[in-house]
Length: 117
Image (cartoon, one colour):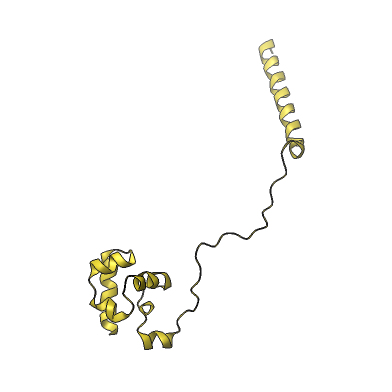
């Protein structure tokens, strides 16, 4: 073996030894990890009272339509669309703007509302 190869092997051994020493002392070199005791953030609050099936039939609740949940129902209510009859009477453009959905989805909701009422 020539001197260049021997020197390269020595340098590689020194680098590996330094790496092993740093790895062995990593707990002393690095700070302790932070422990978080607070609960994770809540991104969406549950509705205070979920409507029952009986109250949905009696009041014409919009969540009776497939694809409309409590969050979308709140959006529709704030836009002035509070019951199934209002959905059946609205246009796809107005309904899609109020709920933040596509007009295709709004057309499906209007068709479902017309079959219910």
